Length: 304
Image 1 (cartoon, one colour):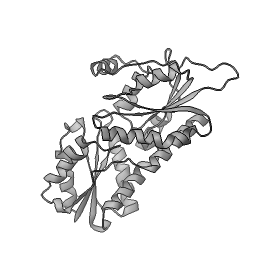
Image 2 (cartoon, rainbow, N blue to C red):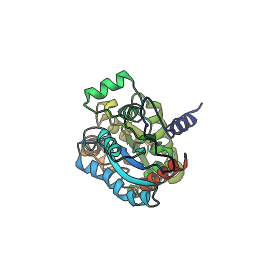
Image 3 (cartoon, rainbow, N blue to C red):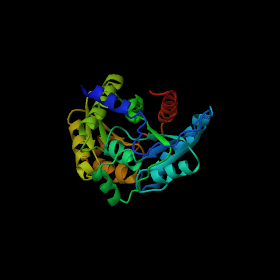
Image 4 (cartoon, one colour):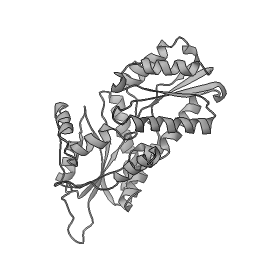
């Protein structure tokens, strides 16, 4: 199975309700419609600006998701660092008598968080190693009574490619002699999927924007949060092009990444005058909001 088919297969699997050992016990009475909630889940951050950008997504999609009456509530949860946590919100759904919760992970692609941590927090998986790791990080596990359906992640659609194209064109005065540096968090266990993610975006930029040179770098724990990989990628692009556009492939803006890691790499570049960098992120993006509304609708209808 090739990479694209593998990614789609994994995404498709996440559309199927995962009902394990007591998770999803709530069943509506015969003749009554299920009471359905939506939970938007993101990683969490020490940055208030980062958190606010994710909460803004909820505010932007709430009315549209609830417009036809199929969904009774939309909430936001953070996987770690912050409240409300996933467990806090799922407990609140249970206490309010919800029968089903559609969980939408606002993550870029498959990772340890999306395939291991979140399902374990929700009681869908029971890997002792993951449970121990979450306990060490003081992340509460909660097995809800409501049935839980996990949707695919953001790379299930073309919205990331379109987002990066728009941001490239906004920064590049002329794409003829401009290269792009894509900087993403990365994941050691699912490195192949992350390389596929940035590779697909790079090919899209070459096709749609006429970009000849694309390099990428990781900025997360995989590289010890070092600016060095980003700096090397900038240098690689500038060896071939007159200018480099540096784009964080990150969901929201956190100064620890956009300033201290990626921004520091730009500042360290001896050719800084040839580098274009806005310190931005995927959010805000109306297309992402539209995707959230659509993926919830598809899930309610029985699958993407």
